[in-house]
Length: 113
Image (cartoon, rainbow, N blue to C red; front, side, top):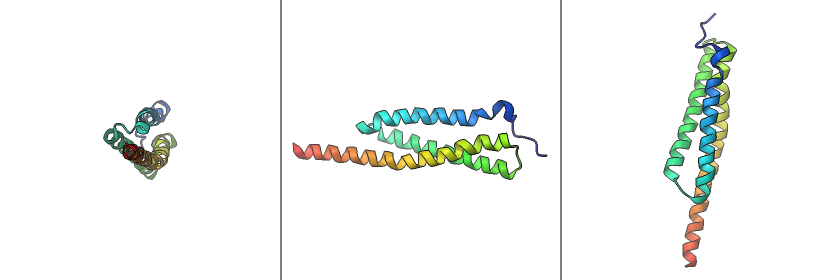
């Protein structure tokens, strides 16, 4: 049997919890700033970084499965990786579209003046 990368009984909660906290924080920042059209550069960079981290977690989970790691090890990486890749990826489209809507409203308001 392959030596586990870490003790899944004690540490398997860390990747998902850390990613979940980061995603929740970013969700709050996005929800507060995007409707106002603020902090576009920061939000887009941070959001795509969050997406990249999810992809890395997913790849780490697949590598752990391929390496024969125990269930608690590979699942700790694969679960937040897959969920993060799907949820953050899908919401990327919504964020970009929301910024475009805000820009269109600003242009329409300027045309009224």
